[in-house]
Amino acid sequence: STAIVWLRRDLRLADNPALDHACRAHQYVVVLYVLAEHEAAPWQAGAASRVWLHHSLRALAGALGERGGCLVLRRGDSLAVLQALVAETQAGAVYWNRGYEPALSARDADIKHALRAAGLEAHSFPASLLNEPWDVRTGNGDPYRVFTPYWKSVSRRPVAAPHPAPLTVLAPLRRPRSEALDDWPLLPCIPWAAGIEAAWNPGEAGARGRLLEFLDEGLFDYADARNLPAAPAVSRLSPHLHFGEISPRQVWWAVANRCGGQPLESRGGEAFLRELGWREFAAHVLWHHPDSPQRPLQARFDAYPWAEDYAPALAAWQQGRTGYPLVDAGMRELWTTGWMHNRVRMLCASFLVKNLRIPWQEGARWFWDTLVDADLASNTLGWQWTAGCGVDAAPYFRVFSPLRQGEQFDAGGDYVRRWLPELKAVPTKYIHAPWTLPAAETARCCFKPGAGYPLPIVDFASSRAQALAGFERIKGER
Ligand code: FAD
Image 1 (cartoon, rainbow, N blue to C red):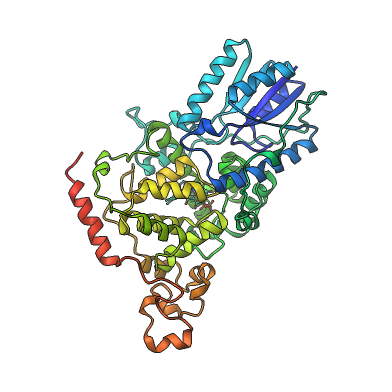
Image 2 (tube, helix red, strand yellow):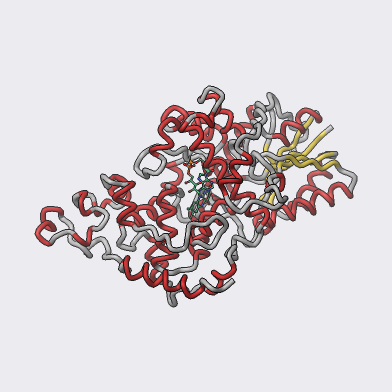
């Protein structure tokens, strides 16, 4: 018999329950990827994610070929594509791993219903989270709104061991037609993605390599060094996890094995798994608040007095030209590589919302388009947290100071110099506030404030005061 495995954000062969079950129950397996961007509206993949997807699909097709399989690529409405492929291959069953984003999970429910109504088997599996979002509840049966008790309730739950990849994924003798990956409009026409391509190795093998590197070089110092953006201390697994090139179960077990089977008893292991816990919490919050990508979870923030005519300030922020080096370095890292360190994401987001008073949704949209790990749940949670309007959010009066963050987390200025070569010669003492460089030093440093690198586009203290005044105005609202 023949089955279709419909891959979506589970672009891997190992620990892939849908693929595993299909290979056990059927002689032939057709592995399908459907490009159906309209179905994710209004959150169709952004430009950087599309670049990643292209390379990840290429890697997946290669890995499947090595196991006797083939990857079928089609464009269109997912249901129509599935129905056509069922007719072509005489498949009796369709398997997939679940997605949890509002538009996609609603679509999947409709598709399951339609396939079953047509007499087909339709099976879906959990694969991208350690816990189903609806399976975690407070004592009162409500969803969690605060991370710490959420994590306390799930962190010691047993995690099932991951499955190895099937040895063979046998395609039917008459292989279904596939569209050519190069015909898909995923890569940009203007080749701006070279920095992304140089920085990453998309695909399952790349994900495994990244994990092993992190286990060898990052894990044991993770608790101490994870906030230093210049250090190679974090895993950079986020895009691999987003596209499902590696499962959280595989990551959990790899960390557990390195920590002698007791990951929560090791400082690095505990700190790292807690971050995976944030990923789970983000999915939990999105599941229970499906309109949170657009709307603040605390409704009074709808009435916040945002700045007027903010287009020039938004453009300066996007281009890394605010005059605050740590913010600009982060925005340029993002533009060049499609990724930004978490500490700097928090700072850049805080700066946009609180110093420029630009709605957090504008920032979330920019991140959505430029991040290779753009993820609806984590991006929404990150932005609402920083803006102070989410669940378990940073208090609104917490305004990250680019100077203080720089002195604390990039004390030697290495991160700033890496992304802002125009500041290379500025002495460390002034690196986070180059506009304070004394006139007597400018010749020696080949740097003159305001020439080649902008002066600050807002004054930190007065913009912070304005933001807080705005929050005072909405305090009484519900
Ligand atoms: P590590 O420190 O190595 O952590 C391991 C894994 O845990 C990550 O790969 C990620 O899957 C998860 N994780 C870590 N921190 C968080 C967090 N705060 N929230 C949720 N999951 C987390 N993460 C995304 O994956 N996609 C996004 O679109 C995204 N947008 C963000 C927007 C803002 C404004 C902020 C403040 C954070 C955002 N994050 C997002 C969370 C976090 O910044 C990234 O997950 C992290 O920087 C990825 O790097 P890493 O893989 O080296 O993380």
